Length: 240
Image (cartoon, rainbow, N blue to C red):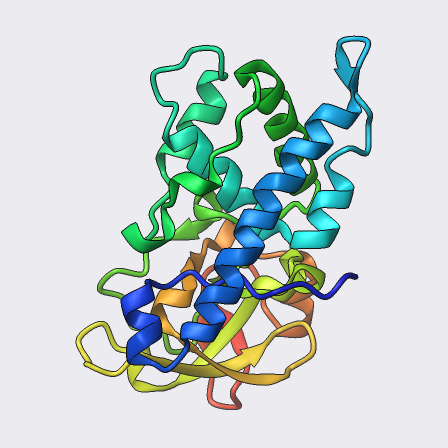
């Protein structure tokens, strides 16, 4: 797996406040390089009315899914009324939310919409192959006490090598972030896959994994039976 500049998702103002301007600038430069690389790949790989099958792989490996997805979504967000892009891709782009300081016209790719749309299809197909959990697999965490719940980590918080459904599943055990009313955000717990302890913020989770979406390997590991997951005295999970 290639090492690439971390994608900085926060605003330039936040970077100044946190003394992270260098990280913001490095990410901005990598965003520019990513947009240029996508343009180059489109020009070099579209032949005989189709793209080479692996044309998206090199860009993803060089810049990472988070950055490639961001650049493509930004381009689609700016092209909502251009029907040369598919309705599915325009819908995908519409839901991009990012600080104004990070939504820069320099990231726009000056290629024919039909070609950029086809490249987007390739990238989204690669993303789909990851088989990650998303909002459709989760119950809303709003107003819910998260302690003892199986939570789904937002894949944007994970490095590409850990963007797997197994690495998304996290058992919350404590922390002010478990409470929907506390001012604290920290959620302590462990990855169910290997029991590594970690601390996330409440907003790092998509939601609470639906009971019907709990994989068999998790049920076996946590000693679950048939119904809903509840904490038990020994720190494990039962289904009651």
